[in-house]
Length: 210
Image (cartoon, rainbow, N blue to C red; front, side):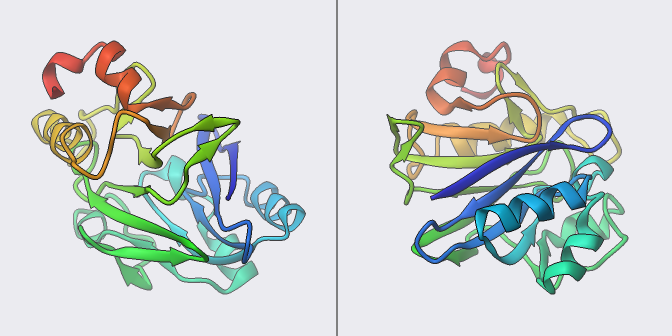
């Protein structure tokens, strides 16, 4: 597996380069800024980009899209609700992503979850094909965008946000998803990584989504 986190843009967004160590195919998740830094990292890793994926369309997750798309001539993929709501309308997707869709990245299958609440078209991406990270045995990983953070949750007071939907998304799409165990790592849009089990035990909002 290739997994590199880059902290980019004006408010420290986590952008991820993720993919296969076998084929070197990678996707760029939430290129929120500093596209030259992201491109340099891809080249250092020997990555072969196949797509830009957005968890959602807020400016701090989208600022580097144009340059990366032009550099590698790759498709942009996100949820149409994000475009239709105006949360991100600078570019249409080359492929609209919906609940149940998946993307093959070498030997890894990345699955799509629709998780509104922070914004109308927010998505999470997960895979259970990754079984080890940093010397730790795991069951898989989730890229959660701004849905859930280490010990916290995403804001729902922006246009199109809804706190009830946000808690429902965390509860139904992550905490009570039969495909996702407590031993999944969460890589969020800001701050450090965590796990589903840690957030079940220690998140300050856990009573709202368990």
